[in-house]
Image 1 (cartoon, rainbow, N blue to C red):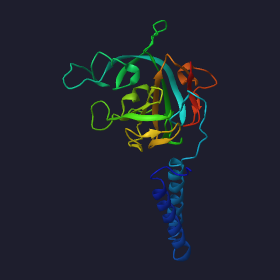
Image 2 (cartoon, rainbow, N blue to C red):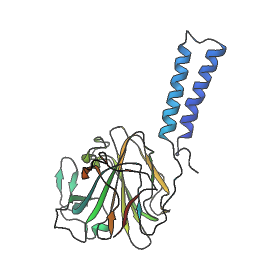
Image 3 (cartoon, helix red, strand yellow):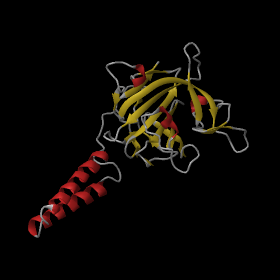
Image 4 (cartoon, rainbow, N blue to C red):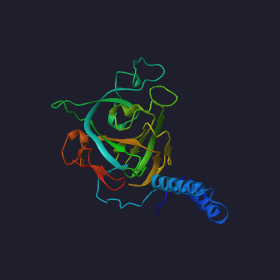
Length: 277
């Protein structure tokens, strides 16, 4: 049963007790001309902010066969069909350098839809679709959304890769609502379903979020909708699935529909991102 995410109870209780202690001193000993009450109320406000950020409500998990659920709460930034155009090079391979995204080998992975390595992707022009394309859904998580992430499918985590962004030790921390934030500090996780399907879910830091906290690791068996980590403060999560076997079930802000100016809002573990084609 979820109430607070991991690590949330201690700071919430600490600030709450500080507020109670300050108010007790103000009422029993001396309120310092009202200043003690101000500090007490400030502690209660911080308690509320921390409790809101670390909240982790239980969610009903859909039981339909073959679906992909959202790993994050937030608005859909965009839904796009992509193809791989390169991959991260090994030490012995030639590479080209991009100022924003780092080093790339110009040949993508032989099986791009198994997501064996971080790859470079580009949007597929109309009429050039292929069997090796992927759908990508990007979810923007505001500071007010639940920040616990959940497994999009039931399966095994076969890859969990941390990258710091643009070759820097930390950063670059582009605001998460911008498309370029895909190259911020991130943790890329690949789930392998029992039927051989691979799903890639990438936790991406934002300008405020500086900590991605995975709670699971390679080799862990996950249930659909099971909690596997969180990102602190505003951030983003991207999901990729094979385009030849799935249909997007959500609307992104890039669709420019008046009903969803910020994109459709989804909830982790509950909202269905993709249905079988």
